[in-house]
Each structure stands twice: as C-alpha cells, then as structure tokens.
Length: 518
Picture 1 (cartoon, rainbow, N blue to C red):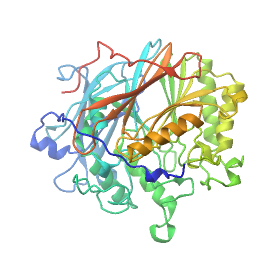
Picture 2 (cartoon, rainbow, N blue to C red; picture 1 turned 135 degrees about the horizontal axis):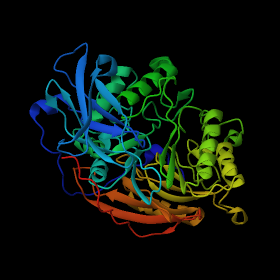
Picture 3 (cartoon, rainbow, N blue to C red; picture 1 turned 135 degrees about the vertical axis):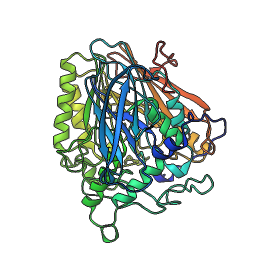
Picture 4 (cartoon, rainbow, N blue to C red; picture 1 turned 90 degrees about the vertical axis):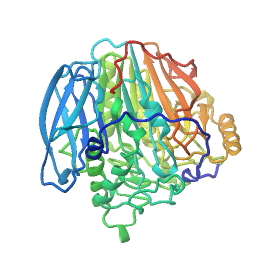
C-alpha cells in the first residue's frame, strides 16, 4: 500500500433532514452556539454554553438551573456564574451533589432570556447490567454535513458520546477539503495559529445544528487528536507547524489547548500547562473507561516508516508518566473486579503494514513498537482480561485483535480487541473500487483484522453488558445534504474473557429511557 492518510477521499448518496426545535430569535442570537454537557461522574457533570453579547461586555452574569424534568417543574439546583471575553464568553458550571445514573435537564438564562434545554446523565454506580456509547471522531467542516452527529443525537438511550479527537481541523479552505459548493468554507479562511483564530474555528463548528443537537441531548467525553492543534503533532512540534513563519510551537500548543478547553464541556485541570486530558470514568462494576493522550503529552517525534528508530525503546507514544498511570488504572480496575476495561484513544493500535513490512502510517502505534509491546506485556504479565481499545484518526472502520505479532501464527495470542470508528466527514479511500480491492488485500494479509471498510463515513455504537462488548458500525448515506439515512455496516463482539472478535447481531434499544430535551 502506498496511499498516504491524507489521500483518502469519499463520495456518498442522499436522504432527508431533521431540524432543531424552534427557539425565539433573541434566544438564538444570545445562545447561537447551543448548550452542551460533559465529563459526567456519578455525582457531578459539566454543563456548558456560550454567550454572544450584542456588544462587548466586561462581565456577563449568567444564571443556570438543573431539573429532573424537561419542563422544569422540579428545579433541583440553580445558581449564578459569570463570563467575559477572557473566556471567549464561554460558560462552564460543574454541577455537584447529583444522583448516580440519573437523567437531568439544564438551561441557562441571561437577563431573562433562556437558552435551549439540554439533557445530560450521570454515571452509574454499583451493579450495572448494560451500557450504550456512541463513538465519533474526525469531523472536517468543509468535507460535508455532519449527518452522523444528527444520527447520534437521535439515539435516545445512549449513556454518553465519546469523541476521540479531530473535533476541528486547522486548515484553510481547499487544503483538506473544499467547502465552497456547500457553503462550508472554514472561518477564518486560513490555517489557524493564534488563540483568536482557534476560537473562531470552534465558534463556526458549533453553529452546525447537527453537532449542536448531539451535544444538547447527550453528555460527551472527549480527547483531542492532532488537528485541534496541527497535523501530526507530537510533544515538541508538528508536521504542519513551521516555526519560521508560525512562531513558537509551545505557544501554539498552549493557545490551541486553551480554545479546546473553553469550547468543550471538559473539567479543567488548572495544574497542567496546556491541560492534562488523560483521565478515567467508572461505569459501576461493568466498565472502566480510560481516556488517553497518544498525541502530545509524551509522544516522541514521528520517524519515517523505514527508519530503524521505529523499534527504539527510548521513543514513546504515551510518555513514561502516562504509561505508569495507565498501568495503575488497569491494575486497579482488575482489582475491583470490574468486568471491562476500555481505552479511549486517538490512533489505531492494530498492525497495518505495507507489502515490504514497513508501517503504513508511523504516526500510529506501528511507529512506536516499544510502547505497544510494553502495554501488551503488562496486560499479559498481569493477566488483565477484557481490554477493549476504541480508536479514531484513520477515517475508516476496523475491528482488530491486538497481539504482539499477528503475522506469526505460533505467537498469535490476542491481549485485547480494538474497535476503530469511521470519520464523521473526513475522507477514507475516495474510489469505491479501489477501497474494495484494498479491503480484500488487507483481509488476505492481516489475520488480526476482522473487519475493514475504507470508503464510508459514520459513527460506532458500542453496546456492552456482562457477557460481551459489541461494536456496531453505522455509515451515513450522504455528506452533500443534510440527511438521517444510515446503514449498518458490520457487528462484531468480544465475549467475556475472550480477546477475539466474532460476528454479532445489532442490539436493540433499551426501554424506559428518559425523554429527549424538547
């Protein structure tokens, strides 16, 4: 295979549109970027909005309320907070003293004008029988409409949405997608570098109604990938950062992290320069979700695919501190007898090699052999069962078994499984015939790859119970118009205690789910 990741491109077909509920013109003007919630815990959750004042104001007072019902007949908590230009007029409230596994409704008010109502949910505690998560990544604004976000919004019984990065892209128009035909030209129309430019780009993305609705109906758990800063970023720089013309990398990294933190419903860590995004979410005794930073915090610089440095034990993808932290999370989860351990992270872990045996993309775990081997050695040595990896970044759909070397039959003992989600809009292989041929080639030469689809965009639904962790790949019908058409691509599951993937059947929605926010 000689295709680069950026050379992937796509083409899809058409269907219909679901619209947001009506809000007053004044409310739409003030809350033009919607509402959101995120980083749920058993007793707290972040609620978010952004105020668009008619004129710049030094301080804007914002009231908030959270209720047990969408009509707010039973308000449980309310309060007053403030925002200003220093925070780009974004608002975050960390609401505490909540009950586990409970749906809540929230809203904001500025001088009597109320925001749309948002819907959120806390994490469960104790015995948990089942979870449903949507997994998304790679939403490139000029490449098309965010129909997959609308489909996620329409799923009523999700416990949370996981976003694995590339929430925005830093490019100007026509660098990676031409938004001219659809009226989706990036703003500002240039590569973004400064704090104000990153803020403008987030503001544009958050005007998209489908993205807004997915945020409004579900709590999100997010990490960044590279395009929230610059393509193929690492700890000390990025492929798409030129210090001679774009200034100091650390300054760009810091302002991109600041804008990400302002515009996403994440719980800030003020003790970390540029933010620490690796953290753990516990879903009772069923699942521990360990979100990682494989992109910046400890990543060594990428090397060429044929470089002997690929195997250098001194190069790292996670960094020593995060590696130790991850090992602790895995062992603690095992010690609590939690059934499943899920790693939410950015780049594909399963091997993908060219015909000469070199990594197809050394930006992935393939480019950091020592890091992958150390993780798998820790899992094997400690006999840690039921490890599942969620990945994004590659703009395509994959189901992989994770082992030290899948190309040596005598050594094929899988230590984990991996579910890789398709992009929301960013392209895979643009020619369907070429994609089909390459899928067949990968299937014939990569025994650990149990599913690969390189052409279509969409999202994953992951349904987990005591007996299995199951991924369902859903693909959208078109990107060129707003649509709610989707197609189920494949269903794979890993049974309890078995790090192997087998075919499954699509899961049914749970009953007794709380109503949508109106």
